[in-house]
Amino acid sequence: MRATLVQIDVDPEETVGDRRERVAALVRAQSGADLVVLPELWPVGAFAADSFASRAEPVDGGPTAAAMSDAARAAGVWLHAGSIVERDPAGPLYNTSLLFAPDGGLRAVYRKIHRFGFDQGEAVLMAAGDRVVTAGLPDAVLGLATCYDLRFPELFRLLVDAGAQVIVLPAGWPARRLAHWRILVQARAVESQAYVLACGTAGTHAGIEQAGHSMVVDPWGEVLAEAGPGEQLLTVDLDPARVTSTRVDFPVLRDRVLGLPEPSPGAAPLPGS
Ligand SMILES: NC(=O)CCC(=O)C(=O)O
Image (cartoon, rainbow, N blue to C red; front, side, top):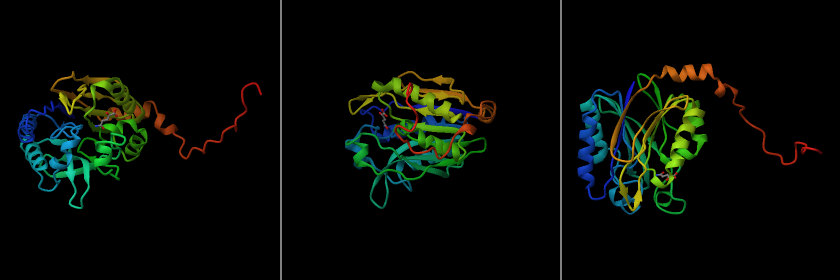
């Protein structure tokens, strides 16, 4: 299964329309891949909170969804189109990832569960998703997560329990926390015994320098490919059978203790007492 991550430079000098056309052309050129992955909120920029409301678009009939559906069909690839600011017809905004099949059909929608910003930006401007999403491809089951979700291992446990073998994580991760990114992407792969395809953005928008450094990590935690800071494509061949063999040969997931007891301070004797 050949996967290509497209680490896009989100430059505020480029219009959203121009970027959409440029990215669609990049996707159309990936006809040799099985799966193409784009970053989080690449049309507007993950930190361009001032533009979220004005750049929000619906999934049904929205310009990015339409362009990505066409591009997936033209290339004949599965396309994880990263995420858009979704304006739900019912009102709220969501950070919404879209997965298209090679016929252009929309096969999965994931609304980011953990919103970043503490009391600002996405955390206050967008609503949280409430569904854990997996999608069956011909060769593997994908699990969907987005950027800040990376810091919440309990979501990844749920994805593993739902059958995920390849976890796709579009991101817009700041350069300032590159060290966290590299450690956490590897940690999620090791603990999930799954491939993690983590696709970030390049460039600087809203004054936040992006890390780039998209990564593909295998179920053993080995980094198969890592981008630099600029716009770049990463192509890697994945073997979903490696997920099964890793889980059989080193069956740590089998040793999970479900329903751990509540902490009870002082229950264990103190050393020396
Ligand atoms: N777009 C994001 O979710 C950013 C997350 C981030 O910067 C962090 O977790 O650190």
